[in-house]
Length: 404
Image (cartoon, rainbow, N blue to C red):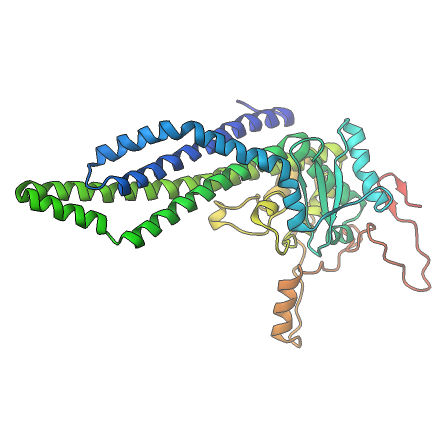
C-alpha cells in the first residue's frame, strides 16, 4: 500500500500492523505444536521422526480450538484489568481540572480542536521525564505524565507531548500495542512453561525411558533392535531439538514483531503532535529534554514501551522499542521544518564528590537538566516555583496568552 501523506501513512501503517499482529497470533499455534512434539517424545518412546511429526500435527488440530479459547480469554482479562495493573505498577493517580488546571486545560483544548473525547489525565510521582497513553476503549483512555516532566517543560513543550500521546490514541496505537504486548506475553508465558516442563522431565527421567525401552527391545531381537534403536533414539533427539528451536524462534519473533510495531508508530505520533499544535520546535525541544532522562524506576518493559521515549537500549537496535531521539528530531527537521538546538549537554560531575555518592545519584534519579538558553528554559511554568526575593514575578506566557 503506497503512502504519500500523513493520513495515507497512518492507513498504510495500520494495514501492515494488522498483518504483523495476525502473524504474532499465529506464533501461539507454533508454540502449541512445539509442546505437542515434546509431549509425544515423552509419551511414545523409540519412534521415528515422521511418527512424531504426524502425531504432533494431530495434537495441534485437536488443541486448536482450546488454544484459541485460552488466548482469547487471556486477551479479555487483560482488556478489563490492564489499566489497573499499569496504575499499580506506576502508582499514577487521576487528577482533575481543579488540581492541575493548566495541564488539564491544555489537554482539553487539544481534544476540542479535533473533536476527540477527553481521556483521563494522570500524574505519576517520579523525577523521570516521560509520559505515556494507555487504554483499550474510550472509558479507559488515559494520558499519564510524570512530575519530573511537569517541572522540566514549558507550556508549548508540554502541549507537544500531550499532542504526541493524544495522536497515539487517535491512530489506535494504544489498543494495538496493548494487544501486541498481551499476545507476546502469551507466547512468552507458554514458551517458558514448555521449556520448564521439558527441563523438569529431563532431570526426572534421566534418560531412563529411552534406555529401558531399548534394553527390552534388545532382549527380544538383538539383530533388528540395534538399527531400530539408533534410528528411533536419534529421531527423538532430533524432534526435541526441533521443538526447542521452535519455542526459541517463536519467542524471538514475538519480541521483534512487538517492538517493530512500537517503533513504526513513534514517527507518526510526532507528526500528529505537530499537526495538532502547529509547533515542530516545541516537539523537538521536548524530545531533547526527555532524551536519556525517561527511565521509570520499577516500571516493567511493557510500560516503558508505551512511553514517549524508552532509554532502555536493545541489541543492535533489534530489540529497541523506540527509534532514537536523533532520528526522530531529524524527521521533524526534514519534514516539518523544525529547528534542532542539538543534544543537551550531559551533567557534569565534580571530582570532589565521592564515587559512592555519584553512583547513588545516577541510579536513583535521572540526570538533571543543564543550564539552557532562554529559548530552552530549564524550569517549566508547570511547577509552582516562587520567584526570587525582591524580583517581581512576571506573568508567564502560555500558548493562549499570559497566565493569570
